[in-house]
Every structure is written in structure tokens, then in C-alpha cells.
Length: 266
Image 1 (cartoon, rainbow, N blue to C red):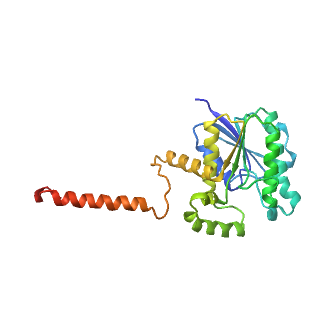
Image 2: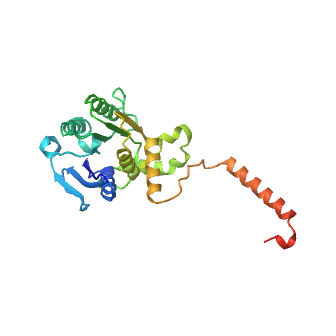
Image 3: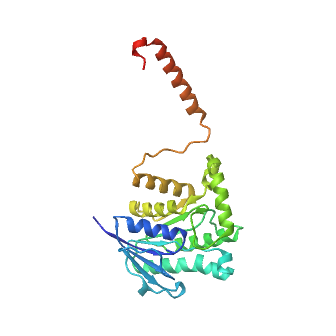
């Protein structure tokens, strides 16, 4: 079996931490190299950690890998300014992807955001859209872009707004059905598993964008297969067709019970 190698940038963030664990636990990967600004709290025999400053990265800091996963991302508030925010969410991913191309890495997988659009009136989505546009312009051998909705999980840093939003979305998720389903928040672990699944299946697409609903579905299926569980489609809270089927089944059973001789009944 071909043993793969991967590079992960942004491994100390919410999704990055989950992704590193998924890759290390996978039988597909022999080595996972993390490029980070600080040490990880997670250790594994497959894991190699390189402490680097992202604005000083060079080709010598990278080596060939089958996939490069870019999980970098921050908020304008945490970054402190628009300039610093764009460094993390725009400049760094572009520079990293450019180095990956020079190193011959065949597949780059990057986290963007739902609603990413360079012409968006929302600054955050505008920056993410610029990142996507420029990544596509690099003509990478293969590029997978993931646009998740709000991500759920335990972050090391406290983001009060996201924490409140996460609680609200946990409550609202069950009622987001039909066209609203795409707005459901998803666990960061689902996103990590979806990225891993896309890399392993390797459909050879040149550029592909995965929207939040598809990410959620891929991540859930991957989790269920790993756990050897039965895959069951989600249902509306009130499934009247199913209720009607139950009523019909009850009527049939009652009729059969009446028709049976007394000594056959249990």
C-alpha cells in the first residue's frame, strides 16, 4: 500500500488540531509534517513539527508531500487590524500554496468560508473570496476549497461572539431544513474528516469547491463508516409519512391478530 505524507499549516487552530489527529490515526499516512508558530499539545510517532514564522517561510522549510492542508484563519478582532487579518487569511495561504507548487506537491486543500466572494459587501467574505480567486490563478495541479458554515468545537482562545453563535446554532440546527440546511453549523471534526476523505479518494479534479452542506455530509459518512454504524439520512422533526406508515402497520397487525386462532397468538 502506498504510504502518503502530508503537510499541515494552521495545526494549532480548531480544525487544524482535529485534522492532525485524523491524519495521524489514518493507515494511509506514514508521516505528517506540521508547520506552526508554536509547539503542539499533541504528540504522535508519525508527527514532525517545524516551528516557523509564516512571514519568513521559504522553499527549504517544505519538502515533497502528497497533500498540503492549509487551515489558517483568524478574525479581524484577533488579528488587531485589517492589514494583519489579510496577512493571515490572504497573504500567507497564497505564499504557502505557491511554495507547495514549487515543491511539486500535487494537491492543496484549503479552508475558506461560506459566502466567500471577492465582490461581497462583507469584508470577511470579500477577503476569503480574494484568497480563492488568487489560489485558482496560481494554476496549482489540484486545488480543493472548503467553505464551511460556522464551525463548532472547543477553541484554545475565547471568541465570545462565536461561542454565543455556536450555542444558538446548536439549538437552531434541527429546524434548518430544505433550503436552510446549508446554513447549519458543523463540528470542526466533520470538516477535518471531509478534507481527509477528499484527499484520499482523489477524484483528480483541477479545482473544486465544497460547500458547507456537502462538507457536513462527507464528514458524517466518513465518521459513520469508521465507526461501522448504519448510515441513516436525516429526517424532518415531524415526518408525517413515516407516522402514517406506522399507523398502517398497526392496523395490519391488529387485523392479523383478530384473524389468528387463539392458540397461535403470542
